[in-house]
Length: 129
Image 1 (tube, helix red, strand yellow):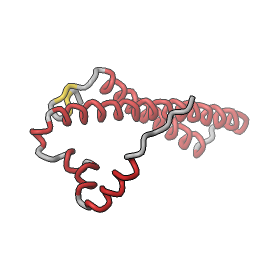
Image 2 (cartoon, helix red, strand yellow):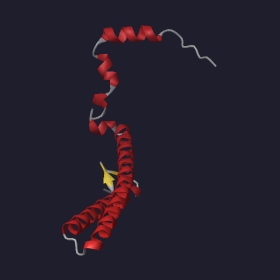
Image 3 (cartoon, one colour):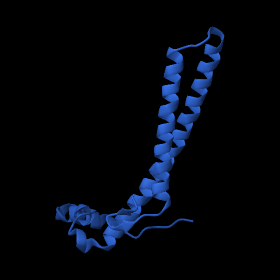
């Protein structure tokens, strides 16, 4: 994901997504270990300790996954913002792609509603300090 709609993305975005994928793999591995060790206890006295150890490792992996999810969401949001900003600059290429959904076109569909909105905005606003 080095480019999105022909727009280069920041280098941290692909790195963040790679770290998120690694966190997913670590969490999956910890869960498999926990299931395997819970199904096959080796010694009676050690099984409680091993189960607790596996659960704690899984908890740590899930915490790491939660952190990576937040970072990945932020990185993807940044990529979206950069891409839409560039698409709006080059609006002639999309021919109404994002511009077709603007609120200005929606408001121009019903002139009666537009007139009532203008009447409300004609009064000067008072700024209190």
